[in-house]
Image (cartoon, rainbow, N blue to C red; front, side, top):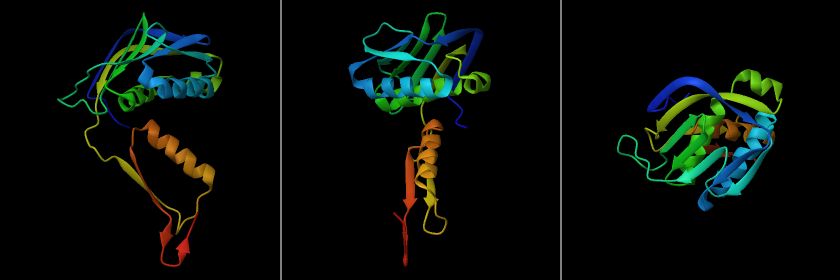
Length: 175
């Protein structure tokens, strides 16, 4: 499990409930839609996606530097005012929203009751390595399409960015 560069937890929790608004910078629309889909799937939370900077969860563009790096870096702040994810681009915002998803309790994920509490935190993070990958060899051990797609979802959750899909070897070809 990737450990953030900086993680500071404060006293208190913020409740994500159905009907919340995910506001986003124009360049982060795909990430906002992805988060809305995952909140619904993970915890049963219905969310509305809007461009702008007023919402329960805000994805905003900003200069974020962590250990001198800005590529793929993000800042995540959860307070009584809501959730703010700041990043240079959509990639950093994507990693920030994965960290937000990781803070949702297992009980909320199991219940899918349309709400989830997350702790008040400040997170600053950037990948330590450019290549963070995984290899899947379906030539020797065949995997179903659903298995491969689930693996890719798990890779995204753990912020892995390279997928080596080994589909050919000698006489064996799998597509």
